[in-house]
Image 1 (cartoon, helix red, strand yellow):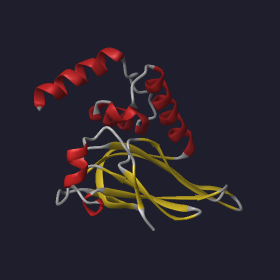
Image 2 (cartoon, rainbow, N blue to C red; image 1 turned 180 degrees about the vertical axis):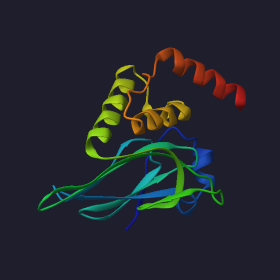
Image 3 (cartoon, helix red, strand yellow; image 1 turned 90 degrees about the vertical axis):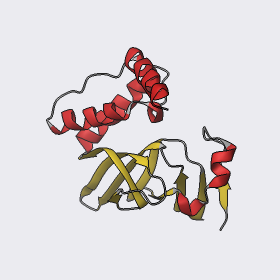
Image 4 (cartoon, helix red, strand yellow; image 1 turned 45 degrees about the vertical axis):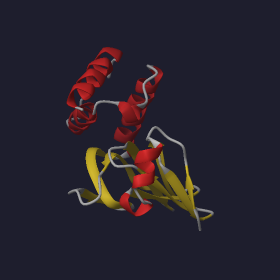
Length: 173
């Protein structure tokens, strides 16, 4: 089993200084209409195929990604969950989640298909603006989580807000 590197947004220097053991690993499973775990957005640094239905995706520290988990039994859906996480640096404190090693910073955690579907539509709207959801202000994902838990509609993410986030991020470097 070999790991396949994917060219991404991270620099070659950054990728070469970290081993895959230092990256956040997410195990994906795809058993059609039974268990389906997938990455909705995010820039993986590589992947390892374990078998026909399982693979592991690696994320560089600081990368933001959405991890969707869905499972069903003979009687219907038993799990619908969407987590938006920021990968952590080696040795940093983190929150743990099943199938995510060692864990990450949870920006959004939603359960139940109706709410998961609303967040997926929100992600689609952001992509419709030409913005990669992995580059969205992390505070916006927290905002969406809080409003969704209150059963309210979150504010839409705008190009103006994104431009302000990018400027703020540059100042913080």
